[in-house]
Image (cartoon, rainbow, N blue to C red):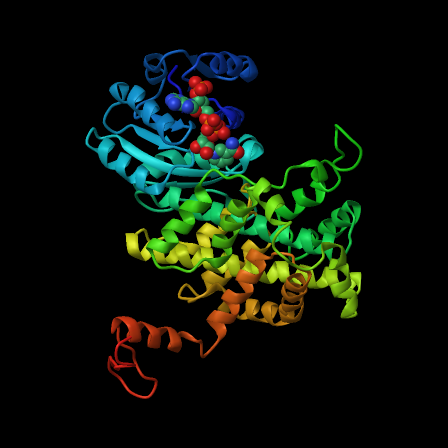
Length: 477
Ligand code: NDP
């Protein structure tokens, strides 16, 4: 019997996605560079129709033509090696999908190279981690549309199933799929940092215990902030330290690491001159956190408010705990809206620049379930871009304007309290400054223009008439 689809790479993601495919009634062939995961998979799959292949020859022979192969291997050299191993055994028309986190430009290069042999190459972002892969991820495939139609019967079955449809859709040609996944991850960085800052303020200014934090986040998860990340955060506060007294969270080193998709998002935003301050500050926050030893040293040198007096800043303004929790909730929600607005804007600019024709409502739709950033808010984002495809900024959707109106006070209060207490809020304050920048009629950019013209004769425009002007600001400077 020839198998419906092949999975190459049985790491965490490959193994779980392959089990998901088998559960949905498709026959599959599996292959892994080292043989042990293949044996283990065959045992786990039981009597499901699985060809457990030890060699690439066996693997490619086992598949229906044209072949459909999903690669779930380490990005970079792992994918390069896997393509090199498979390529001699593939034929014109075969579809090869990189379902890992690869940079979209690398995917586009590979697509070009493989198209010379008639191989249809796909870059597909998969989100949802281990459990998403097993029970239904959100998937963002990009490549040739006709090839997508051949993958769709399988992808739509294995994707997370939301009332609005399966969480997979054709994103666009070339690297569009990997690009959308990259932006998803950038937004994920922003969401995580905003949540971490909310935790910091609640804990250190509000004095909330882990138990109270768990309750607060659980309550938030019943309302407009409902999301996977808020839900898991609520749970994290409840987990006991298996090696000690208190909570595990308090025993974890406060230095965050990352694998690169957030940085790629910031790099591409810079290339396209798109402003994404929330995501950029989330990446910066991870970088700055990573040098724990340095921070411990500097904490003894650079002055700032006494950490023991953080709670006093709220008390001094008569803000009780209940009011603080409400303000932090509003700040988190409004900041999150700014972060999504920046991410969607970047998608739009990239789509224009690279002629991808990305469908923003459809992207918001497939992020509603299965992926790490799934959130109630996404249905509003979908509706906002569906009702006005030309919406210049998500924040201008009339219903979101109302949401932002109601959250002004709390948002500003949180940023100022944190500043007073000496708590950094890189992402929350970047979001608020983004908001104030885009909504402000007059900015101090007139001074920047004057300075540029002063030292570099870069010219400036006047408010009251057209034309590029230059002034001799001062002789000899
Ligand atoms: P890994 O990224 O660790 O990849 C494991 C697989 O890659 C194994 O099959 C391994 O083969 C193969 N591999 C590693 N190095 C090489 C190499 N140099 N040459 C050939 N093959 C190699 O596991 P994951 O399953 O976590 O991730 C797969 C992809 O999915 C990655 O791109 C990752 O970024 C992405 N991803 C992961 C998520 C997660 O939650 N883990 C979530 C979303 C995306 P062998 O067993 O022989 O070593």
